[in-house]
Image 1: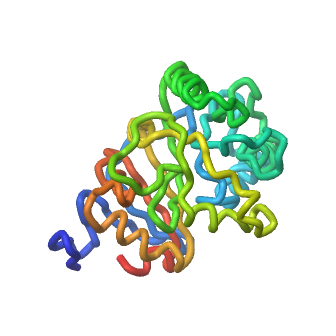
Image 2: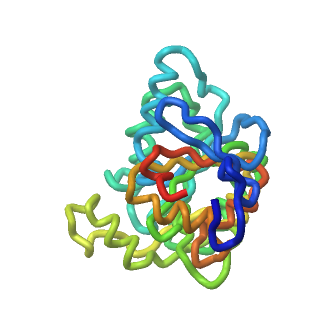
Image 3: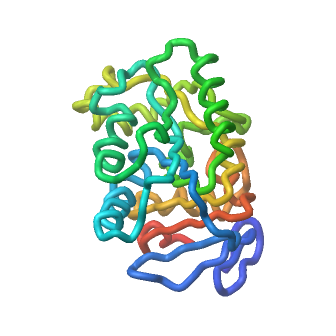
Length: 251
């Protein structure tokens, strides 16, 4: 297999990514072999979406997993939405995961989207992440333009938690969650930065569908560039990409 960077092995290895045998219709690539532990960074609710959370709830209900010692730090939150707004990430995570498992509410952390002081809100969240010892397992999805969290394409990789102006593409993509009205979509968000994501001990990304195929190829079999934020994950020592055949059809 050959791409714009050179020759890959027959097992599709490129820049340390190794493809593994399909399991249950899924394929996965990984860069390392470390074990995940307790502190989990929860991904953007639209990417990877409800599927992983539904699976976690099912495992919990069967007694396979326990959340009593888990600490979560979510990737992002819209700036300006109250917590109880149905489209806030706080509401989504409670509706689809937290309200269904035995997690300690004191161990749930999200950026404070209600704080209008961006500098203070971001500094507070950075301190929370540092205080829990960083992130053991970071769950991610990927946007069609390669964004992870709300780290949008740009000229440089952002470092820690910061306030971001959402791109028009992201706003358009999210308007379906706001009655199709683009004017109702928040224009800013607080998001964990690339540095913080890269410091997670393990990163797991879940992708599904043909709509993700092009950006998966671009992000993980193209150059590392802030114009495709997810491409930085090629450099992570323990990154796993899980996807269905459609999402991985171009690699």
